Image (cartoon, rainbow, N blue to C red):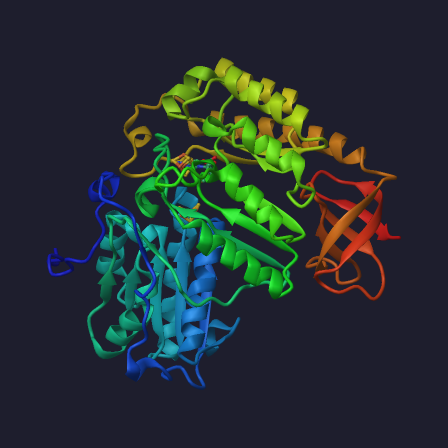
Length: 479
Ligand code: SAH
Ligand code: SF4
Ligand code: F3S
């Protein structure tokens, strides 16, 4: 066995679990490019592959911005790239398997281009099992860094260029908010805006609190400045991001909540505002009132239920019961006219009985979600649920997933059918990825609409008459 002790900069889940009392520092000047790295990328290309959630999408925009500041240009062609980064996700085992597949493939890329610098970052690198595996088996990797030290990319790249050994820098414990990072946004119409980082909820199945550190909010001025700049740059939509946006501000001294922030963001006049994710636990009536009050806050809420059975919810550490969830659901439907609600559900949590699973189906039938993201439980190393004995076999779990999907799909189709004949406002993304003869975009309720029309540009708001409904999208014509 190789001695890894010299890699003192590796991750530790144990350290990542602790939540210290130290103050959160908001740092304006942590990012710098060493003088000899300023133009290092002139005439060269970078390629970033992003896995996982919007937090990673946004981080990749930051990484792109940093690389472009050093002169690199983007490329979709991995063979043309001089720097390749994989921004990884650890939330389920199959997400990790995909990444390892890609790392394997990069060995062949490196054979044809030995000078390529190949880096792995994102949530997987926060896990010691992953880092140890890469160190032991994947020498084609030049650089490993974590979710807390993206801003150190210029320094890490420099070390990777100079050193023969793999460069490893992963910080496990983080209490800082780093501001003033460059970014290259993926869209010119819709933008992600981080409002907070990390998670303190520690749902028993979930790795995110370990990979993203403790909850820490950005200062409201930083967020509002960013939004105002996006308005000035012509953006039509922003999505406020956090693992649990309802906790916004709880770590700051000011008496300023997510409802306050939402209201101030609405007042900037940006045409469309979304936010994700909101945990049912601390969703307040004040938030619902603000959403209902402002036309530019979209009537769309992602409200993960995870399970419809109170005992399972308790074991998951979700801190609400089935009844509390349904009461919240009813309150939102009552207060916000036409609100669309979507959800996340896990089936096959350790020892979930058939009856408990049926309770989840009951909730799905009651809520008739507009969309649902459904998963089979995946044991994540280091989490409490991964240590629970599990009596349910995979075959049963797969059957439950199929039944759940059929249930919500059928109901979503029914809901979508109610749109047929109606005219809706669509914010256009561009030509449809699947069919270049039609445009695509989203309604205020986040329904994907594919439609025919002429002289339409990305970023336009178009009135579309809906002609046909499917489970996952609507078809229509511009009017
Ligand atoms: N912060 C968000 C969730 C982020 S992870 C929230 O609490 O709503 C996105 C989804 O992945 C979760 O809602 C959950 O449904 C799913 N998920 C997380 N960990 C999982 C695991 N170990 N196995 C299966 N699904 C998981
Ligand atoms: Fe994971 Fe729960 Fe935090 Fe969401 S709230 S990121 S599911 S621990
Ligand atoms: Fe995955 Fe990390 Fe997001 S684990 S879901 S990329 S926070």
